[in-house]
Length: 223
Image (tube, rainbow, N blue to C red; front, side, top):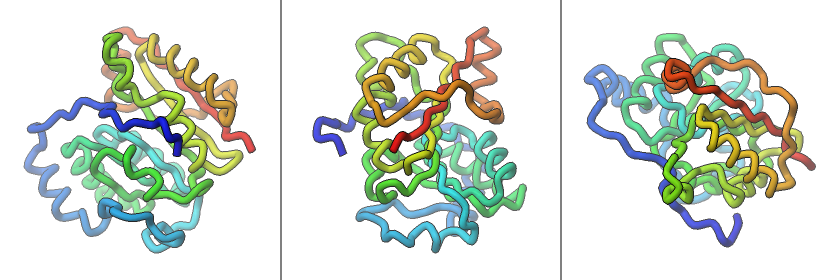
């Protein structure tokens, strides 16, 4: 972990919009899909105990309402996913979708994953990290709150195996440029020419309706 990393809240916490159905799903399905907040580093075999699947491990930070994550999990049923989200309505919505679609390869953590990264994962244990449409913090005085910055990218590089991937997406052009500048400062990541296809997120569709151009950055973890 970079000694200069300072935890700054990189998201706007929106509350009060959870529907009764989302609340019921979250309460009823927590035992099946949720993992407890890690107060200490998890043992090396923790994830093998969570999943019957034995495929590569993906972390998604900020899955929104969870529709795209559920679609990705359905398309790659052997891949294991941990989805992390701070907004309670999305947690309930994803759990309901997982039950409805009969998906078993996703686990859910509610909260800000940034302080807990090294407690959740051993070095080089992740195959992919995906962060789609993080809060862009468009005002200049708020740029320090952006999640994608060199110290954070260094932390992710320590957790992703050589040959693994980091997948970023944004519909805010200045943030896309800032992401590229931050990545240029972390030599562990190599930009690949194209990203794989992925499902559209709910936030992405809203940006497209506003005429925003979506930028995907797909990177490989170098040895």
